[in-house]
Image 1 (tube, rainbow, N blue to C red):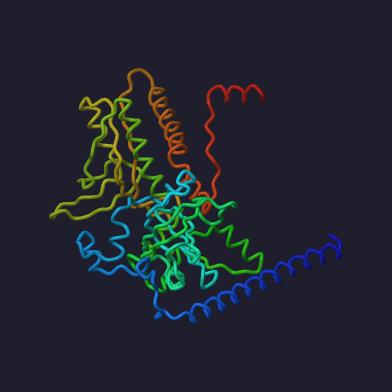
Image 2: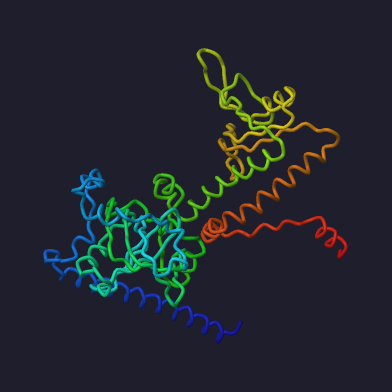
Length: 394
């Protein structure tokens, strides 16, 4: 590489870093200006729309069905809840009531602010502006000051912007006319969900551009797990896990299997090859079951024919790898063979094909959420004809 090309590359990197610094400075100046503008607006000014926003008190929550109910109770009394994940273009120009957590707030001026509301991993952008009926400057200030992770109820009209919305799962916008804080979060949290939801690729890209984004380490995630599992990826993982158990159960039941529930506190090892957690049971030695193997075989010998179980498994593994777990949920199958072991292979083959096809169909959005933080390649299933064609080519 010539010295001239090296200098060009260095100058490009320097330009990127300088642009990133200027952008960071611009954002800081903008935030300071907005804070100054917000402070100039006195909360003590008389507001004719004060009933359209505010904090919901505990007495109001208790008396929501009584005649003397407050503003929040009256506002939501005649409306049905709409889930954030169900907000689509089909609801355009319709008024909805949503509940969710404050993901981020972005004040634009003392007359306008944006708030991103998150519910069960789905996010939607809400606009609070004084040009909307029933919205005052005091309401905009109230929204801009909401703490992240606070739970709010918002009522507004669904709108479809001309340009795609970046940073939210739903491609619609809610023009808010009423907003109430049902549960206020602490001003400062140990970790931000927004930071915990970033992928390694995003953090590295920011470093290349000269900007440093917070990285939430594994020990911090585990110490504040209740916040960590609010990220879209973790929400997706748990919902996919739920579907795995459901699909597994439904498929095997359709194949004539019987679900059984075996003991997890047993007198001795139920299979070889793995260590057990030993304990004292009223003066007698006992251990946690590292497999339902023995009881599955007993069920087959007891003429059940085909059995399965979805349950916890405990193994005293000494290895420290990602593939060795001391506790996990096992999906266990046992069946009698009429003629050939290929009968089992046929069941397993159709089970996995059904499993992944169903997950792609039912958990599309969850898989996308997981993939944004933890990228993975989509699974490819080869049919018999495609395998034969592949072998023919080679």
